[in-house]
Picture (cartoon, rainbow over the protein chains, first blue to last red):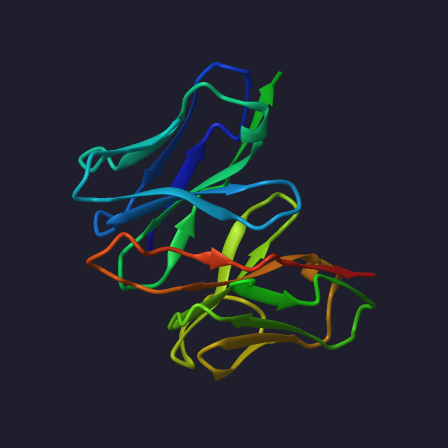
Length: 112
Length: 116
């Protein structure tokens, strides 16, 4: 089965700096990679995703990159703000298989 | 309107009791899931139902039994609750639309179960 590893487990940055969270996966059949943000006491919410036919995707301050050869993908947040503080989860899935494998999460703290 | 709703939001119960958590989605999705998030924040899949049919059953104790009366509902029943069952349980739903970007989970708000 798929194994998703996520690093770092905690990340502390100063407001305005960039934050990068990295994930690796093991199953070359995985072709869909979403990122979820979970604020304290709330549900995980999809913030960005990427499919394996694309190498990079950007949405305002958030971007995701995918390297299929190396089997890793990363979340980049630029110009971080205190409201970006949350736990971020990466996941890997095969579209149509209906099962997501989640990374262990990264707690991001943005200091004002 | 809430897309994926779970009840109750909080559940405190004694060891040995039987309890149920209900989940309903109004998104018209075909697939629903139960995830367990423990104190270390790991999200682990427990079950997945597609059109009322069980398609994923991870290694969970058989004290946990999902029930899907229709594709909009997936309930979780837990027998003989144990201390280690304390966690947040998330329901989710998804719809695979291969030719669009609309894929991925919509999570419910979670049920915090505390077994004392």
